[in-house]
Image (cartoon, rainbow, N blue to C red):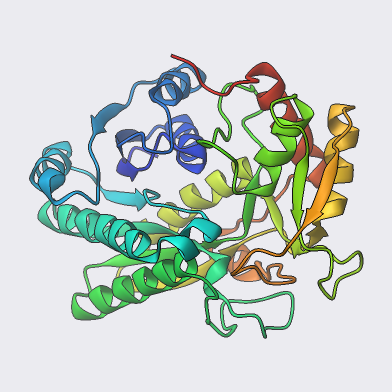
Length: 344
């Protein structure tokens, strides 16, 4: 891969692993990040792992005052396309601050689209989410499943998907894939990059890992009265390295298309695990106790969802490879080597 790719949010959890994957395939990268929920040290470690440099632009994709700089930088970089990962991502926070989520997530996507248009690089892979699906779909959920997001975070992802499709319909030079992630977990096998959320983690695995390493006293399990095997929510956990391979595969697919397109594609394992099953697996991987307490359900959460990812295999020749055991082992390696996350 000799592509030149813009990666927004490239210093974040998923973005850092996507950057390592692309660099390992010979791509050149322009990383744009405002470090609101990431750390500059991640960029240094990306370059160490891949033994390659990236071009870094510290700007806020959603800030109108930064748009001119971003459009110029992208145009000067002469990209072949972009991967859009920048944005806010916490379900509970989106319920409390919906206006902020709509402004930041939709605004940042529009800025990248404008920049790619100006650079004549109308290829985009968008970081979407399984939260675009509703509660009433049968599992495993495929891309034809009913879309009815239950929270503002999911609705921002759904609106951006539709926005990208509208743009592709208006101009057949656009080629786009909306990647509907299920639940990314794990870390790079080196232990050098991983998930380092600001404040109290919103996602399960970093919360478990911080309890295991001693940063948190106990895990909060949000609800044990769901209609599932043990009463806790069931999710499809996918290793972040598998997810990163999915982005590279999506880009390769788009570069092979002779006409415009905009498609939705699930990335998941097709297997669901409950919260308590994930806790037990992490306990085995870390050989640490994981005390937890049951607390009320969170607004916007659903009982169970896992993926039908057969379309990704058909179109991209991609499938998830890593097991829950590997996810836990790699996540623990990152957390145990970096108990306080990234440092300056």
